[in-house]
Length: 164
Image (cartoon, rainbow, N blue to C red; front, top):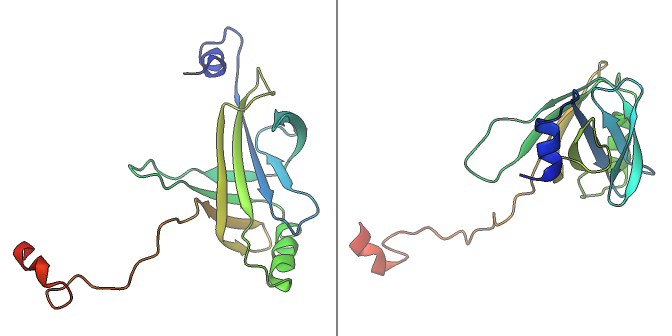
């Protein structure tokens, strides 16, 4: 357990979790940086610099715990369909195959210079927008999903007959 996490868990003064989400794409002028639970926004430190996060109604579902390394976030941004759909259209118009990336950071209210928890390098896999906002799923990129296409049958691999 890190010292910062211990300070948060065993703090004498009240502490609360500040959850931040950063959404980036190489075609966008600036990254979208949103905070959930501070109506005035917040300036937090990461990557040896400070960044401003603005408040928007935001819902983050971190999914269930699993015994594998798949991490998934379901995020709903209450932007009333004004900001995110235009940025997604910008990606489609350029015929880019690059997906936007999501980074989730959680800070202690006692120390905004270093995050307690970071979930990064998640790719947006699907999104839907309506008049209330935008909902999307972000998950870890699928690696090692390439197969040979060969079926392991007795006809293709006669030496497997001992395993049948």
